[in-house]
Picture 1 (cartoon, rainbow, N blue to C red):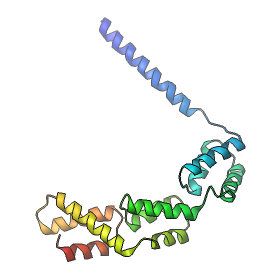
Picture 2: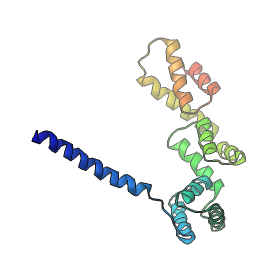
Picture 3: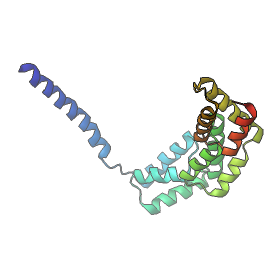
Picture 4: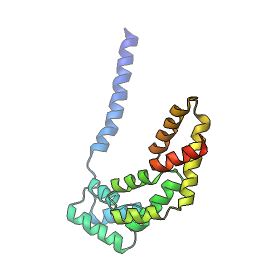
Length: 181
């Protein structure tokens, strides 16, 4: 009986411990306008950010809509925030490091509420030869680890994988047909 009560007592203490952290998270953070602007500057200085990311953070820090827009205007004026610079950095990073295709990159930028003109400009900076080379490498790498022996199912699985990475269907099937993977 002693052992059972000690187990329940321990569980209750653990529950209370974690509940304490949840209460701290639930406390509303309320910063002054100057504190929020300084934090936003540091947030932007760390890496490129979109206006929507900054807007969301400022609302999370308890800022009023008018203050949020004023802070964003100040960040743009001080060159902490630049949508074009963010778009190019996002595009090159996702393509060169994560090997994403144009469709997935465009969807990520739309999710961050980047204007379509900037999205198209950024996607046009990707070198077409490098794009096809990356797609070929991705498909060949996946083909080496794929265990499917039937050619039709194999092609479908490779195509699904490349589509999930954000590449265009016509390019995928051109590469699959030309390389006999």
